[in-house]
Length: 91
Image 1 (cartoon, rainbow, N blue to C red):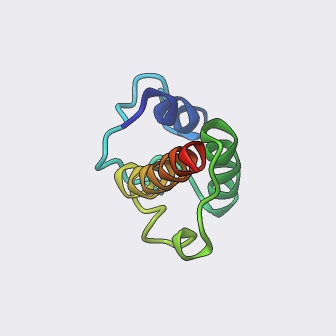
Image 2 (spheres, rainbow, N blue to C red; image 1 turned 135 degrees about the vertical axis):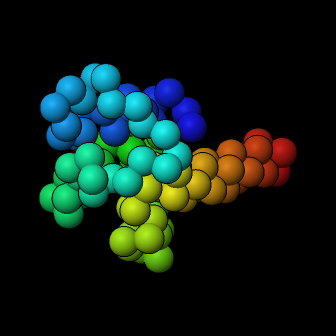
């Protein structure tokens, strides 16, 4: 996972010591305190940080279940964004 992704997640972690909580691909986002309201905030932060938009079909419980599942959705959009940008540059 990209360090910027961890930086976006970290402020939303609501554990006894958020800075010491390891965020891995298996981190259950609900167990670290990210509820539906924080998920919206997280979505906006991700979109701003990475310059992407997650498609509607990715805005579901499965995507926001773990840090890894959310990162895979972000990564897929980054790859599409990069492919589109390189396609425009050569056109």
